[in-house]
Amino acid sequence: MVIPAPAPPSPHRATRHRPGLRAATAALCCGLLLTGTATATAATASAAQAQAQAGTAHHGEWGTGRGALVSAEKLYTLPTPRSVASELHTAGFGSGTVRHGVVAYRLVYRTVDPHGRPTTASGLFVVPLDHHRQLRAVSFAHGTGSHKDDSPSMQRADFVSAPVIAHASAGTAGIAPDYLGMGKGPGLHPWMDIGSETTASLDMLRAARAFAPRTGHTLERKVMVTGFSQGASAALGLGRALQAGEDRWFRLGALAPVSGAYDFSGAELPALTEGRLEPKSSVLYAAYTLVAFQRLHHIYDSPADVFRAPYATTVEALFDGAHTGRQLMEGTPDSLDRLLTARGRSLLAHPTGPFAAALRTTDAVCTDWTPRAPIRLYLSGGDEQAVTTNTTHCQAALRTHGVPAPITDLGPVDHEGSRHLGSNTAATPAIIRWFATLR
Image 1 (tube, helix red, strand yellow):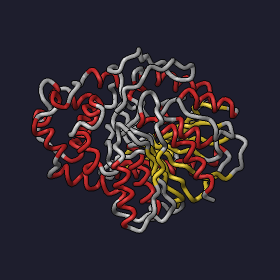
Image 2: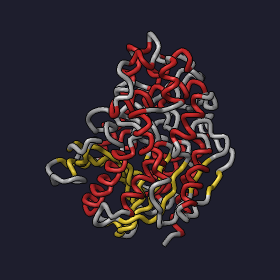
Image 3: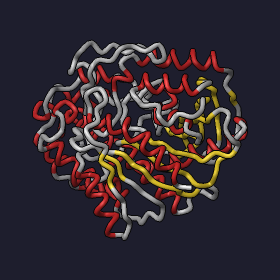
C-alpha cells in the first residue's frame, strides 16, 4: 500500500485534492492508487465530457456470445505524439517510446461471472493513428482499485490508463479489461479471483477484435500479455488460457507480469500479518482480502468473527464499488490489531477450509502450467506492497517446469512515494521495448 505524496492537479484528469497528507488517501496493497476515486463523480463527469467531445457512442446488439460487443464509445483522441507524451507525463510515465498519436474507446461486452452466469464488463481499447492496418494486440491487466472508476476506461491521464496509451502509441493495439464489477460492469468486483479475471480479459480481447475493423484495423493472432500487481496474476491467468487454446483466434505471444502477488498465501499474507508491509496498507489489504473471498467462498459466518467492533458492522459495505479511497482510509483503523479479531488474524496467517482452497487456485498462476512463450518477470527491490519473494517464488516454480523466467529488477524507482507503483511506471517502457524485439 502506498500513501502518495501530493501531486498538482492536471487539466487532463479529474481534480484530485491530496493536501500533503499521508493518511487521507492511499493505494491498496497489490494495487492501484485509490486516490483515483477521491473525486469519483468528477472523474465520471470528465469521462462523459471527453466522450461528448470525441464523438457519439455506438450502441446496439452486436451478438450474444462471450466477447460480443454491447456498445463502443469513442472517449478521446490524442492526435500527435506530443499530445500523447503530455498525457503520459501527467500520469507520471515517461514518453521515450511514443511514436504515434492514439484514439481511445470504451468497449462494453458480454462475459461470464465467477459462477459462469452471463454478465457484462467494460474495458479500454486504444489504437495508434497513422499506422499500418494490422496491429499486434497487447493486453494490459491493471492493479487493484475498489471504486468502479478505478479502471482504465473510466480514467484519463491517470496511472491506470497510462500503460494502455503507452503501448498503443508505440504502434500496437492497447487492450485493458476493467474487470468484473469495475468500470461499467454491474455488481461487485470479485477481487483476486483469477478465474473471472481470466474470462474478463479473454472476452475483452474478443470484443476488441470484433470492434477493430471499425477503426480501420485488424488484430494479429499473437497477443503480448502484461499486467501490474493484481494484474500480474491476471496476466498469467490470461496467458494460460491463450496457450490452452481457449480462443480460436488468439495465441500467446509473450508474458511480462510486473510486481505481482503470485504466492498470495506463501509470501504476501505472511508479509502482511508479520508487519512487513506499510501499516495502513496492511489494514486495507486485510479487509479487502477477507471481504472479497467471503463473497465467493464463505470463509466466516459473521463479520464479527473476523473484524472488531465497530468495524464489523461497516467494513463490508466499504468495498461496494461506490466508496472512494478517502472513505476507505477514514473508515478503517490504523493497525491490524484494531481491525482484526484473533480469528481474523489467524485466518490470514494460517488459512484453512474454503479460504485455503480458494488460495490454492490464486497461487497456481506460476505452478500449474508450463509457458511456451517468452516470459520475463519485473519487480523493484524494496517494494512495500508486493514483497519480492512473490516473484522469486514464481521464478522458482517456473524453473521446475523447465521454463527460464529471468527477473528484471527495475531498481529504486518511486511513483508518488511508492516503490510498488514506481515499478509500473518504470516497467512500462521496458516491456514495450522488449515486446518490440519479439517478432
